[in-house]
Every structure is written in C-alpha cells, then in structure tokens.
Length: 374
Image (cartoon, rainbow, N blue to C red; front, top):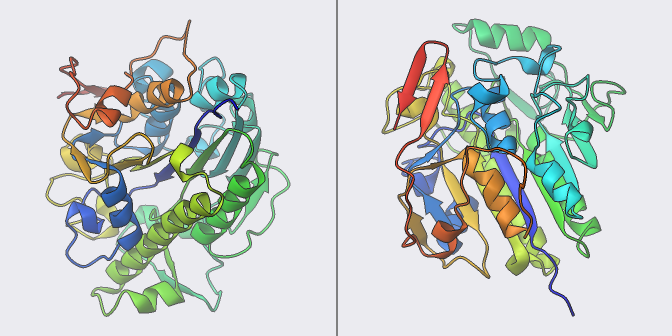
C-alpha cells in the first residue's frame, strides 16, 4: 500500500505574546496542552513573524515571501477594505491543492474578501470565515467582557464588530456561530479531520484569540483564578481557550489514527499588543505588536510530527513565517517550481534534531522608512 502524503495542520493565533505560554516561561498562565505539544515535539526560541501586524504576517506565512514584496507590509485593516493579497500570489494552499490535498480555512482571513482575494480563490476548497469579530454576543450569559476604556482601538472594535461567520461566500450570507468563537472554530476543525481522514488534508485554523475585544467564556474566567486586574484575568482565560483548542485538535488526530502522519504547526501572527494594558505580555522582550522590536516580531512556535521529530527538542536557529510555506511544501512532497519565494525549507532543521547545517545569516523587515535586520 502506498504511504499517504502527510496531513498538515497549521494553527495560527492572533496577538499571542512570546511569553504567554507556560513552556515559554509564563509564571501564572497555565497552558498544559501546549506545554505537552512542546514536550512531544519541537519548540523554537528564535522564531519571527514577517511583520508586527496581522495582514502582512498572514501574507508572508501563506506565500513564503517578505510582505514588502506582496504589497502588504504596512497593511493593518485589509479585512474591511477592498484591498488584500494579490490573486497573482501563490499560496501554500494553492500548492497543496494542486498536489491533491483537500484544503480548509477556518477563522480569520484578513487578506481581502473580494476580487479574487477571498480564501476560496486563494487555494482553499472550503472557508469558514470569521465575518466580524465578537467571540460571543456582548450580553450572552456565558461571556465575561473586559472593555478597555483607555484604548481607542478597543472602543472602535466594540462599536463595529458583530457575532457572525460565513461559509464559502466571502462576506455574504452571514450567520451566528454556534458557541464561543475559539471553541466553535475548534469544533469545525475536528469535523474536517474526521471527514478527511482517508485523504491528505491541509487545515489552516486561524484563531482570533487572544486579540481584542477581550471576551472569555465564564468557565475559563473562573478556572484561571483571581488574577488582577480584570482585563488580565479575561486575557488569561482567552489563552486557556486556545490551549484547550490545541489539545482537542491533537486528541482528534490521535482518535483518527492520524498523529504519526500529521505535521502540526502552532504559532502567532505577531507579538502581543501593547494597547491592551498588560505590560509584560511579550516578556522578556521590549516592544509590542506594531513595533519593530523583538516584542513585536518574535513569536512562539512549536512543531509536532511524531514520525519525524524527536520529542522535547528545542531549536535556537533564527527562522520565520516565510519559511513555513516551503517547509510544508517539502513535507508534502511537492515543490514551488516557477514561484519566487524568500523562505527556506527548514525540514532539515526540524528532523535533524537542530544539528543540520544552516547557512542563512540574515532576516529582514521593512515598513515604510523602518528597516530591520537580524
């Protein structure tokens, strides 16, 4: 019997700080599922987003190209504009789709919703889209809200967002999700795993959490303990929901007998936001989302692939989101012939227990006049 190509699960959080997880040193936020993923796979210490903002990072992740080359380097609010990722760009979803994979996007997109920029036109067979951005209706009895009266971004979001999703229709045909957004995306992701266990699939689960507006499920809020101030407790509860999501995804893969043949990647689009009023969100680094300091660019990253990666591996090589696209393509046994990318295949680093030779010396960032080199 021919060996099936590996499944790919890419879990992408939003504004999760480098220091927000137990395995990255957080003293009070409990993340047992992510800590276990790190213990069973590989954790990266020097992993970088392509930009300190949402849209540019997502473009870099999916195309393997620096955002300045895709025209997204300074973009923040493509989700609600007529702009987005140029349809001429080749995404990892398109590469895998052409190789026979079933491809599914669930959650945030933020790369345009019209004119060929929506997920279904960028390589995804199905797209369950976050059409707006409330995790639950503000008055739901199971939600605990934390409004940030000092933050104009937060005030804008509470005024503008609704509780809605859409399926394979871009921004049309909206409906109410079935539950707290983080859990709902996870429920639907598990259905993707169950329904496609007999063929290779690519699941791109793009969580909204823990991005503002800060809203937690009451049970998570109660579970994290008496954290002060209130907004910090709500934030910790939102991280707890993400941790639960990852655990459920990994458990589903186990239940379907797919774990050994599935590459699971977990990371965040940029550093934690300074405007939420939690100064230590990117500890031990200075800076936040939107800034070009380490706190804005360095993010958590873990990979689990039991048949290929030794457990409890820590890798210190500086790599970035732009490397994920060619790495996934290489893992799937396909290639990007004819597509110019900036990222490199890091599979030799992943499977070589961190000892493989690595020759790239620099990573670059640019946004207007701001230029950064590591």
